[in-house]
Image (cartoon, rainbow, N blue to C red; front, side, top):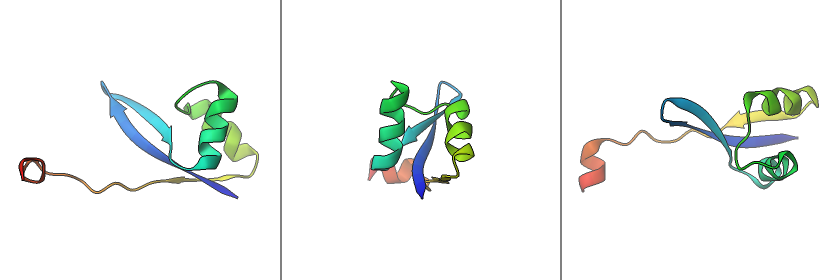
Length: 65
């Protein structure tokens, strides 16, 4: 079993957002919208693989097109 998360930086702080239904379920159980490093360690300790969703880097030119 595996879950997928998305990693973003908010004000310089790394934040992990659930990107699949199973990850969203873990966030609901934790009572949060994001997953902390501690929660991710516990999820991994259960034997669940954690995959980080790769995003395509955007350039300024792509934003203005």
